[in-house]
Length: 386
Image (cartoon, rainbow, N blue to C red; front, side):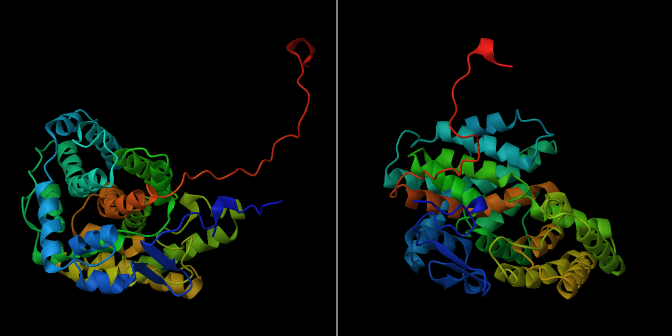
């Protein structure tokens, strides 16, 4: 029986999952039944971690437990830190993070165990330590000593302290907490699918996350917020935003479909594989971007972003995605441009872990290829080949 081929597995249902769903037509993102807007505005990242892993929002006691477990697991193994000191300062932060996670897997006390209990313990350590790894990478490549993570308090506050070397303001901490919530999960995107494929082979959780990070490194998936920030900085002034975008759109109109699909020819921060309307996370991020930009004195960048957004909406039907206003937030937090994708990973580790742990109870993922090569033919001996 012939099976319909769908390029890129577009809209193919590959797994059953109770973790998250995306309604691209209505612009809705739902974690375990909860709308992302409600979670971002009312829940902490620690509450969302518990929700993704356990299916329900935590009670006060459960929240205290997961918060305490995460805080107690932040310190990196000495061997991991020693390894990180050897990485070239020219390495992209995501390359350094991918390698550090792999090293951490070799020294994890549950490295040989793949039980539900062991994987939950590993998920706690990974979720606690990946933000520390990201911050440590940033310190080391700048010739600075790592900052020891906080043994209490929120993931967001500890993350900013480790990365920037100073205590964050209340607005910065709350903003980062909301970013972690918004980026925690997004159904079956490329990196999550890579994690599930790895988990389906019964590989270890660290390997599953390395697979996810490898997929995230590709510019068709991760890195878009880096491109957004580079574009906004290149525009430089709100008055230049509309003509800049119009030139880009005019150039795209003359390209072939294949040329328009290349990452360098896209308008970063716009368009999505699932959403047909604006990404629901973008609206929350826009509010955050304005507030934080005012506090940081970078309102000019927010105004450029707003002009770009308005120009795109007048001239195209491309929906804005989560990367667009998050780039403005990162700039207001004084985060280096090439660290943006690693921050995404620091949030998404909770979702990746949830999917991997769910996949361990499912079957091997083994799709088929649509063969486009030659038909069966006879072997020709070397002496007879021309």
